[in-house]
Image (cartoon, rainbow, N blue to C red; front, side, top):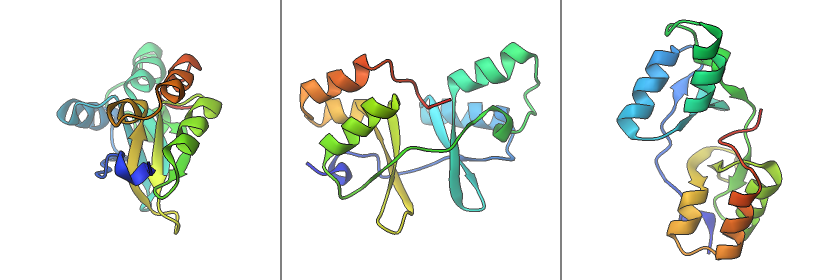
Length: 140
């Protein structure tokens, strides 16, 4: 099975200059725990609900703090046309639970989560490897 067959095809995120309140509101609206962060049309990182707690709330920063202050810089990607086993191995080795999916021109086209792997019948051993690796939403 290819990544494109089980990934989320809609990639909604936030701008690095948006407030963390905007990020939290978007996560709530979309019922997700992480969002890609865009700057200049490129994905430059990820922000998670955990990032908001640890890097904003716990430090006493306010809701107007820019997302780029709280996000995890850098991203881990996989290709839409690669086998899901390769993506799952990447998740396990990088200790992440989500990957930005890109096309061969490196343009973001979606997101793949460990839940997507499980829901679409990916090899249970691969799913177990990803989930047992202590993976977090993002690196950092």
